[in-house]
Structure formats: structure tokens, C-alpha cells
Length: 119
Image 1 (spheres, rainbow, N blue to C red):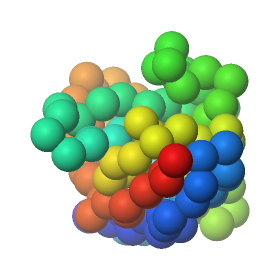
Image 2: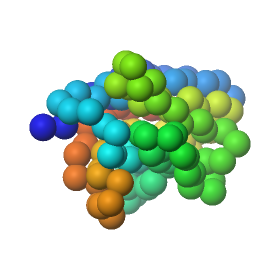
Image 3: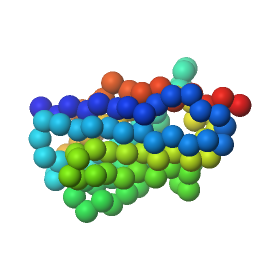
Image 4: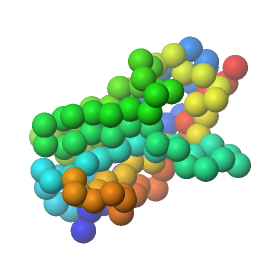
């Protein structure tokens, strides 16, 4: 069974940076796509970025392009999200998620990590 555990969230000032990590366990991920989502208070969950584990092809939400970078370390089975030039509106709980490459829905989720950006 796939298990995901996020870390790296915290409080940062506007303009600052954070790197989130998501440790994956339970299986190999060669046939998986993994991604980051976020949910701000009172808002729906929002897609941030995804990466295909095999090959590393990435895709970003338009609003995240240029500021956020998704990557993975295959040897460590860990997913990352580097977030730069953070804005108060980036404040949210950030989740990592996984799905089979062939699936449309993500069916495995981490518990989330809080990111708070102060103005």
C-alpha cells in the first residue's frame, strides 16, 4: 500500500522560499504520477503541479509556473516542491498525492503540511 508523508511546511515572509518534501513508501513508483495540491481555508482543493515518476515529465498549473518547481529523487523515493517568491495567497495546506499513470484520479494522499506566508 502506498503511503505518503509531507514535511517542510512552516511560516515564511512574503518573497521567501520553502521546499516541501513528500516521502513515498510501500511500493516502487515507476508506473505512477505524483503531484502537489493545496487547499486554502474556505476554498476548494487546487492542483499545483505533477510529475511522472518514470521520466520526470512535469506539468504545472498556470498560476504556479515560474515560481514553483516540482522534482523527485528516485533513489530516495521522495517528491519535492520548491516554492519561491511566496505570496500571502499561497497560504494553504499542501498535499502530495499519487495515482497510476493510466488513472485519472489520485487515490493516495498524504496528511498535508501547512504553509503560511505573512505579508
